[in-house]
Each structure stands twice: as C-alpha cells, then as structure tokens.
Length: 163
Image (cartoon, rainbow, N blue to C red):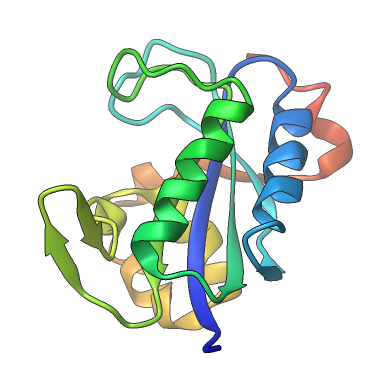
C-alpha cells in the first residue's frame, strides 16, 4: 500500500470556527495521518467580500487513498460537519480543499490538481509555504496587499476575535 502526500486547505467562517476546524482535523485523521499542520490564520474573505473573516490552515495528510476517493471523502466530511452548498465563495461552516496531491497534475472536468486557484490565494499559500518551503516562491509572488489579509493567530485568541 503506497502512501501519498496530500495538502488539504481548511477554512471556516461561521459559528465556532475553532471547534469547526478541530472537528475537521479529527475527521481528516480518518483518511490518513496528519504529518504537519500549519499555524492558524485569520484571513479576509476571498471572492465574496461581504462576509465574516475566515480561520484557515493547511494540513499535510499522508494517505493511501487515491485523489478522487480522497476528495469524495473530504466532501462527505464537509456534509457531516454541517456544510451547506449555496452561494459560490460564500460563508461556510467548513471548507476542505484538496490543494496538492504528490506531484500529480490532473485536469478533468470535476477534478483539477493542483487546485486551480492555488496560485491566487494568499489564505492558502501562506500556510502551505509554512509547512512546505517548495511553495514559498508562489507565496512571495502575491501582491503585498493580499498577503496583508492573512494574519497568523494563536489558537487561544481565535475565540476572542471579532467578525
């Protein structure tokens, strides 16, 4: 059984963000082993700006699951944690994105790897570069204004942060 390295973006901006993220991490452990976890970041909304700020991190997951199966199971976790699918880029209890899977490049109608918006999203590239230096150049290529919207936070302070 081969073990693969997948990077999973974790985001939440509704309800108890820290609890949402912790429950997602526990659920992800049913899909493999979390080898590394980035710091937590308070991030400005992306795509749709008029919504609460996000709590984001990236997990490096060692898994035996193939990419499509992994993605399907991540979507089941989202549903189990209360995600409803509505407005694109809108608020969500939890969002799990398969960002990178080994060095696979895949371009199919329902699955693209690496994630098609990876290079545009500071809220993903900052935590991703923190746990894998290969992504530092992509992070550093982003505009400063975008990077300024991604602020590292301590776990203990998340509950005290305003919307």
